[in-house]
Image (tube, rainbow, N blue to C red; front, side, top):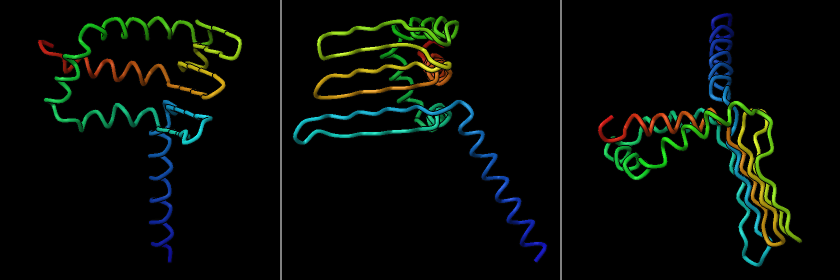
Length: 145
């Protein structure tokens, strides 16, 4: 009986540590709601650490191809994220039109984009560290790197 309790404690501890490691960077959250006939409602929550981890399983030829396509944007994206980290809670863009509202800001070290219109709402929340990790991995696989 004691052996079973130790095994259960070990398994439980492993699950807790794995969850804590996976959630350490936060969550990438995408919510899309369309308010029309046949509209979709997508609510996606992914641990931010899972995306760079999953990129390690992408075949090299596909990573090289993606890096090649993004070659011109990668330095700009890398600099953009580096600068955004200096402003952990800042409002960068807010556009209000009669019935539409667009907002882009950083909040708690995450990039937050909100779009609200009469027929749809889109909310994206992504930790800056996850964007930086993805950018770094793409730069590593760039041709000539």
